[in-house]
Image (cartoon, rainbow, N blue to C red; front, side):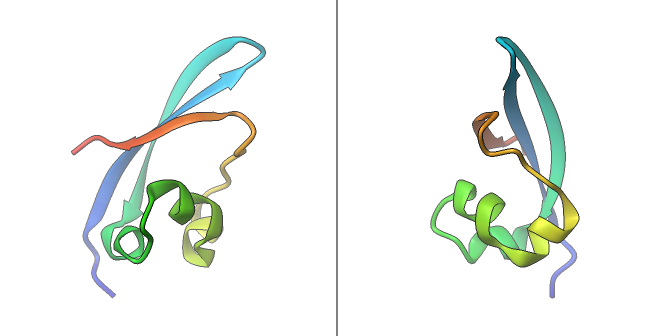
Length: 64
């Protein structure tokens, strides 16, 4: 597996207050999914690396 990582910014809302978290995900894992959200919700390797509360997630996008 490649060691190249892609920076991703997660925009979250918590009781009407927005904030962001920057994370890194292996590029190869992202390329295995048609949408970034699918990678964040379904990929076992990503789920092992980080927990994303999908109910609070407003947006996710690459920052590099």
